[in-house]
Picture (cartoon, rainbow, N blue to C red):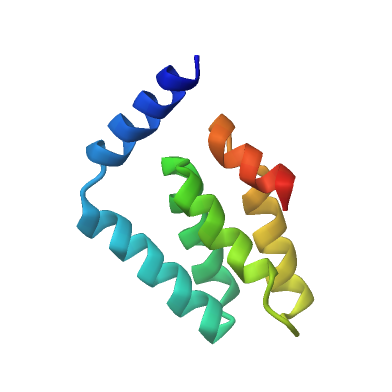
Length: 95
């Protein structure tokens, strides 16, 4: 079963062009740094929709930053909780 999950994750990763992944990461980072709630919510939705563990890592990385605004914090918490991919959820649970 572990091989099957790994294969599914690989297929999903290959199905999404690297440029699209880069764009989602860039959008997330810009919105987070600007503390732009609406843009951050949209970036998180796109990341969660793809559902890969790297997306979960990205969102969780924002939670580890000191002194984030409460509204930003809760956007990230809700996004982390919305993942449905078991590998991504495993990362969320560990955090």
